[in-house]
Image (cartoon, rainbow, N blue to C red; front, side):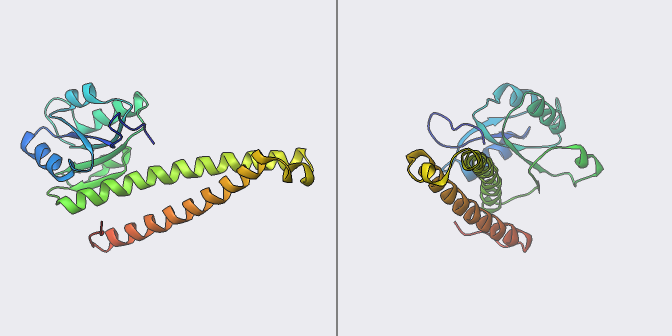
Length: 193
């Protein structure tokens, strides 16, 4: 997951060549996220930083298409989720794109907020899995190198056991919520806040 901004609000960049559309999306999400508008692909490239967590990206723009912005995001190693929002129907070219979600215009506020939260939750899940794997690896190494009496008396090892337990519980909870929101989206239901 990308780093938080200085305001500690997640940062979202809205990329759409139609400024009125971008402003509408900003109104939808401005109370939850730090938002920036880019009214074209080149402006998006210039606006991106490593603090950006989510990019809302139009596919068809006059100077630089959405797929070119996607290429830049991946080439520069930005750790952000991309939600494509387009009036274009998905075509076979979409198979070559790396994105988290594809929404078809027009969209409503609840749909946009739910989708952003869903992709942020996916980021959180991936972070938790990494932390859990690292903790379990340390635990395994300690168990293979030291006897149980030594480990029982070691505060760091005890804290590691607690961390593993807490991480496992948070992974299970996050996965449960993620599955629930995914099921609701598949059924076309709004997700309650």
